[in-house]
Length: 367
Ligand SMILES: Nc1ncnc2c1ncn2[C@@H]1O[C@H](COP(=O)(O)OP(=O)(O)OP(=O)(O)O)[C@@H](O)[C@H]1O
Image (tube, rainbow, N blue to C red; front, side, top):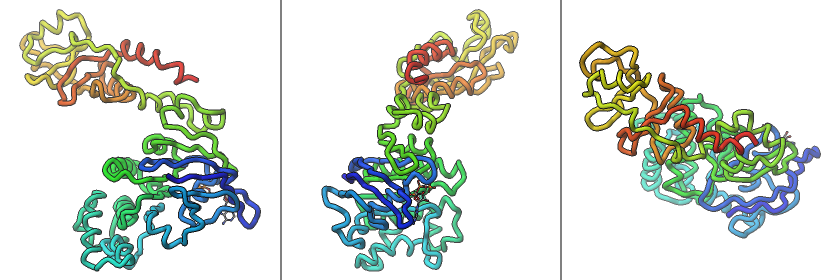
């Protein structure tokens, strides 16, 4: 565990970057520091590995004041990832990752083997190992940055806006990769970002800082979104907080209608007689094929002869209310098909059923 105990950082010019910060970073979890520009996120992070020392207070790593540990020893147990990866430009990718193990005295072969294993682990094509950093895309360089930080298998990882400089699609895949890696590695990660979406997606706990380096709130993402501590946090979370919050609420309780599913082999008259504007068509295995609109059906034949419109789906019992809402928005019918883990349709969520379920959560979403 990392403990901030009344930590203050006053720079030489008198700027108070961090002011009396006290919080715990739990072992094996991702704690995100988020807040507006200049609120002291980077300063707080860098005090953990002693790139900066506090003016007052203490930072304890598993109970030991970090200022009593000499920086090289301390940093051996702390990986560090920064924006734009910060790779050594004149070293090949594999050597970038192998550098730290080699500095620790590993043989060249063992360090390179470890580097290759890590490059694979972070999802990098091993053909890139012999290239130089400038020959990689920003997203690929960022993966190398993560691999390099993990090379000596440190228990702690500090990540300072590591994904800020890449485009949104690459960013999403890097975030997902990090979550996948973390589910295997269970490092103690402190992650700095100014992006609240990234914070609630990645964090087990999110620390919102305000300018002046003071802690505004520390909570798990669902609690943070449901119960912001004050107006500053509410503002920072933004107007779409209610929508974001739906990502943390299970869609489990929404009413499903099995009567709106129809097999592709059914006669078109079955759809017409149902008196519903849209029915979800499923194949012989029960997998959704699309929506059939009653008004566009051919005069005769089976439902399979109709023009089917793609359906939005979500996994019943696993996905969030947000996924269910997205699925309804993606369907022309305004309804979503709920599937089980194997992809078979189990029913249809209508907009009315969704509205009813959303109304049940509205108190917190508005508050
Ligand atoms: N070396 C320094 N000397 C004086 N002031 C500094 C120094 N480094 C940072 N600051 C100031 O300390 C405050 C906190 O800076 P810090 O970089 O920790 O913020 P941040 O939250 O990481 O910001 P950003 O999101 O913009 O990177 C800012 O007002 C900054 O200008």
